[in-house]
Length: 253
Image 1 (cartoon, helix red, strand yellow):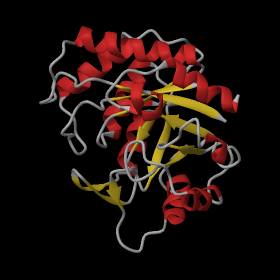
Image 2 (cartoon, one colour):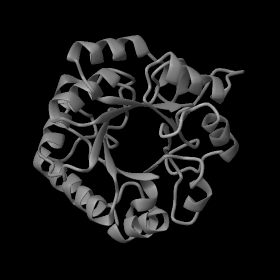
Image 3 (tube, helix red, strand yellow):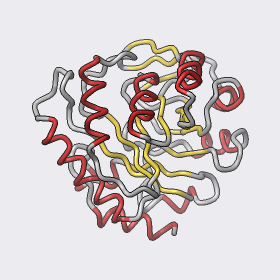
């Protein structure tokens, strides 16, 4: 089982909440990268977590340029897998940044189907994402959320059906199961339903993993994406605590 840590970028230029210079944002991100890498993670997801309120699915050109500049200027060991997540759901921008920075994968919150989110109704566009990937002639992998956090699916939707469609109809390489919100534990029954659908090596947990509950996921998940529980005081807005990283990694390595 692999462990990926999350680097939550401070608000980028182009976002209404931006207060820091690009150099200050890079320095804060590099500190978190170092703690994650030296703590033993296998991969890192970099996301524009500070850019609230989020744009639904088309970030500004300035934010796109700023995000790319930050990633390009981070020093990350070459054996660490790097992914890009552009919130709230700009898969095309994520692919562009990943391609420009030689990152290995993107995370897309709503790749297909429809979700009711705090940004409104978001409709996935797997065709556009995969077409752009083809135009780029890119080998960047697509990690896609099923019933993503901070959102609800249409009534009557079944998580296992959505997971199956992500793999077989939407071009997802990995399916991510999350809880209801950032740092919230997943529903273990939902995880089992998705595990029954998704091939080995292609299932990730995207929220709520801690050093105290990680044992429950040993035989179910292939990748653990950990953000909140790696932070000082379990506060997603604070820096990564290398001791918390090491504690969780020791439990599964």
